[in-house]
Structures are given as C-alpha cells and as structure tokens.
Length: 332
Image 1 (cartoon, helix red, strand yellow):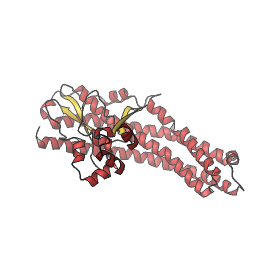
Image 2 (cartoon, rainbow, N blue to C red):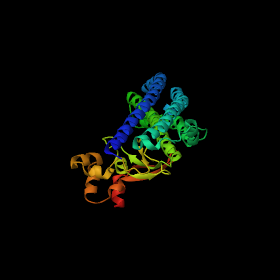
Image 3 (tube, one colour):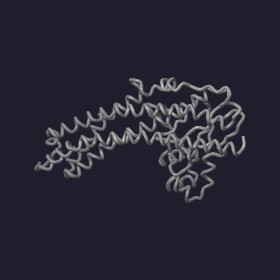
Image 4 (cartoon, rainbow, N blue to C red):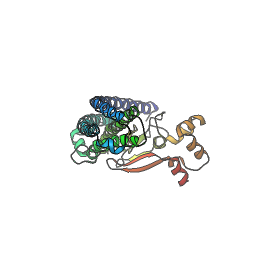
C-alpha cells in the first residue's frame, strides 16, 4: 500500500468521524430542546414551592415534605421525565439507525480505499437486520432498562436536593438554583446514552461488515483522533491490531473508530499511540497526561499500556477507560 493510499484512508476515516459527529449533534440538539421545554413547564411549580418555603418561619425537612407544592413538583418532575424517556427513545433509535447505515456504507469505502481490487464480491449487509441483532431498543433490553431509570432516579435526586439543602438552612433562591442543577443530571444522562448508542451502533455496523467480508478483511486497527479531546486510554490504544471477534470497546461518548486490516496490506496508521505520544515535547505530554500521571510515568512507576483499564457495563459489556492515578501507582 502506498503512502498516498494510507493517507487517503486516514483522511476518509476523519471525514467519516466528522459526519458521525454532525449526526450526533443533530440528535443531541433534539434532546436538549426537549429537555428545555420540559423544564419551562416545571418552572411555575418550582416558583410556587420556593415562595412557600420563603414564607415559612423556620423551614424543616418534615414541614417542606408536607407541602402540597412540594408533592406536586416531585410528581410533576417524575411524570415529565417519564414522557421525556419516550421521546428520548425515539431520538436515540433514529440516531442509531442512521449510524448503522453509515457504518455499513463506510466499511466498504474504507476497505476500497485500502485495496480497490478486492471490492468486486463485497457483501453488503441489511441495516434492519443489524439493528435487530443489536436489540438495543427491544422491550426489556439493558439500554431500555437504563433509560427507564432516568425518571425515578432524577426525580429522587431533586427531592434529595431540596430536603438536604433545607436542612442546611439554604435560602429559597439558592434552592431554586440547586433544583435547576439537579434536574440537569437527567439531561446529562440522556445525552450520554444517545451519543454512546449511536457511536457503538456505527462501529459495530463497521465490524459486522468486515466479518461478512472476512475473505478480504482480517481484522481492524484502533484509530484515535490524537487530539486535545483524546483521553490517554484512547491514545494508548491507537494503532493496535484487533481480530474481527473483538469490539472497539471505547468508553461512553468515545469517538474512536476502526480502520479495516485488509489482507495483504499493512497498517495504514503507520505508528502506535505510544510512539506518537513519546514524540511530543514534554510540556505537551504533561498537558495530555496530567501532572501527577506524567511525573509517575517518567519515574517508571507504570508502563504506558497500563493507562488502559476495563470495566463491565450492563449495556455494552466490557468497556475501556483511562486508569486513575491511584490505581496506576498501586499496580506499579
């Protein structure tokens, strides 16, 4: 494979990442707008509660829990979030469906860029079959169970926020602001779920296409953006080879992608994340890694590959993430 072909693959992969990011942005805007509308519907109930708290001589947790305005607010938050869950599912499902289609198409394009001669007998998968195989949105799936916890858990968080801060003697205006902050947790959860299921669907559609064409593709290479948004785990994984039965098990919100390992061709990435990182000036290395980790690494307290750790997720299985400093030092 020529350097030009290699560069073309990398350029194409980055363009595809940008396209996925645009699709992601569209879905996230829908989620944000819906959540904002929901909050505005709750605003008057928040105002009524904080006004009643302001009129109390000495607000207590027991007294506030007895207020009808408190009960109304918590019940309304729970119901609004239940409704929001249904909307979020629709947005997530469409985003994931779009990502599957993109993943199938892009797998062929990337393989073709690596070796145009191998595409004649390419097996193109049915997107609907891939979506069914994933089963993310089927009743009782792990993802749907996680989504269904959004309403009760966040409604309870708001209730705890109100009562805990009453006990701390916070004033009603402060409590109103804390309610807004607590409600934001539900939005954060929804955004993370939407982005992650979309990215996972895209990558697994890539991989399913490579598996269906294993006479051409023998595996894949992990590609990180290698930029300021890249965590050290993703940098450490960059350029590593993986067999077709391995998933690109990035962390939540992870934007890494896979490059097909075409039979008879080399690694188009040309280097590993470790080699790339070691080529940077020390001030940049310190910025990427953080002062504590950088100093521990320079002192030989851990190996570069130790920056990658795994954990089990009930939706996606094993996922990778950056190892905390205390774990690196303990293991070292």
